[in-house]
Image (cartoon, rainbow, N blue to C red; front, side):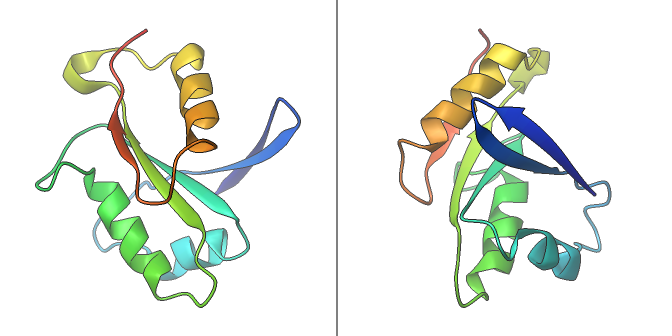
Length: 108
């Protein structure tokens, strides 16, 4: 479930959700319980202008005593490719915004 990536001396973990319903609440909580911050990447927008996955993950993390910073970036709308450049932008922007930030990122 976890893959580690090196990006400019930052240790990053990647958690992929393969099954949305039933939502893997326990697994998400266990995977993210010791993290300082979380970037949720969605590929679609839902009601309220945030991504569906972001809404569910934020709900799971809300139950934790020590909650990480959580941001949402919506990528690939309309079939636009998600490139390394886009992911680099997301990682850099995450460090500059507050928890709860939601942003739709258009292609490169």
